[in-house]
Image (cartoon, rainbow, N blue to C red; front, side, top):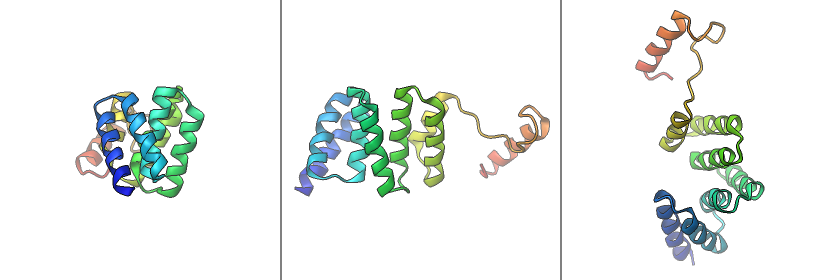
Length: 146
């Protein structure tokens, strides 16, 4: 039974990576019926939101996955994407940033870059354009401290 759900998860993830959320929904739903692991629920939730526009259910499933595995950033990626589909951009950005605090995730970074999100100013009490913020930000980035 567990092998079957792992195979369905793998097929569902391949479909998601290819952009075929309809096929991914079928595979992940079948996997979730056999094994309700947080990873399966999280990806299934995104498919539910994308294909069925059932945002309330999708968000509940994703939050359940986060409650079980709060350290796993992929859950935050899926929840952020669900909130983007809902049109809740600011909430999605907050969720993406929470996910990055847990673990480095290239998918989250790509979403934030696509949204055009800038990092916080180095010195929040100064305007973003201030020369100290500009050069201190570049220095911190070069030193990989932010």
